[in-house]
Length: 147
Image 1 (cartoon, rainbow, N blue to C red):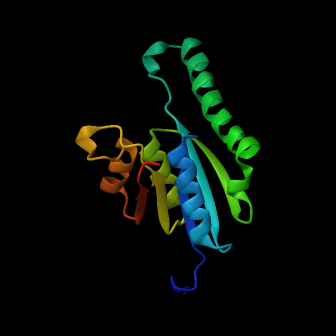
Image 2 (cartoon, rainbow, N blue to C red; image 1 turned 180 degrees about the horizontal axis):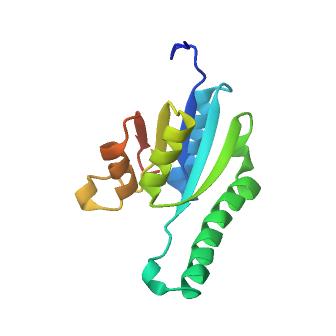
Image 3 (cartoon, rainbow, N blue to C red; image 1 turned 30 degrees about the vertical axis):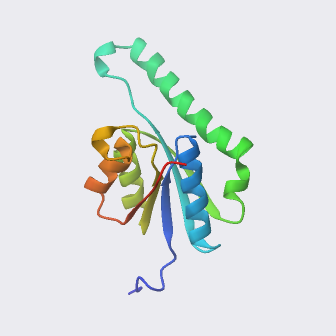
């Protein structure tokens, strides 16, 4: 049996290309300190199936393409955020909080890290995704304040 103290950390970061998600990525990379794994999750919400085929497929492809461009920009424009760390990029078709939690469970993550844009008054200065993660995750969730 492997004790948690000896297991390598695995941090899942929710990434949407915003300044706050880049801040979360920086924080996670620094806290891994060259040990463990970083999983960067970008999600896209599939369209409603009431659209019918082929419109459904066209909209799905558009949503997936926009999300893929976020990951592509991370690597091409902000690749220094991934320097010195073992990482993987995940593109998931699901609601953001659900995608992050699912990847964290599947990968045996030790922590989830997200940035907050603080867009809603009802969310008390944290964003809706970070608020939902705090409600549904059974892992530690670090929410970094808006930059």
